[in-house]
Length: 114
Image (cartoon, rainbow, N blue to C red; front, side, top):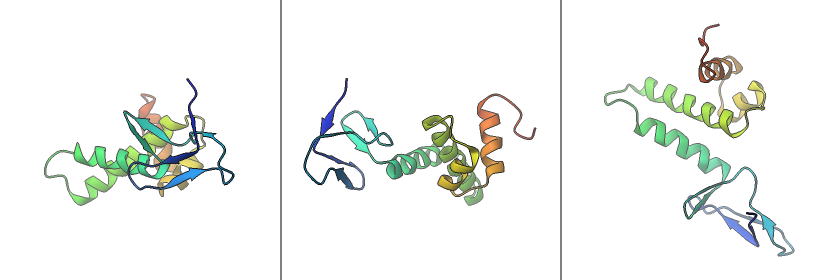
């Protein structure tokens, strides 16, 4: 089912996209739909990080929460675009390509240090 609209508005941050001439356009490919809500890429990333830190064990240190959030963002990006190079994901997540490679290997069931 293809859906188009004149404007697409993120339910979280309110950013709105559409054509200047008012023609209908498809939902941007980087956006996600959840039930009745739409999220831009930035908010989708933020929500992935929030969900991961909310699920973190009680008493997690600040460093642990930072690592958990970073890993969740990288996993989100890998799932969103499995063919994306590690360098592009690292840039989007503000981390190193080595961290992305380790998380990708772990997601594929390999040992992360190989």
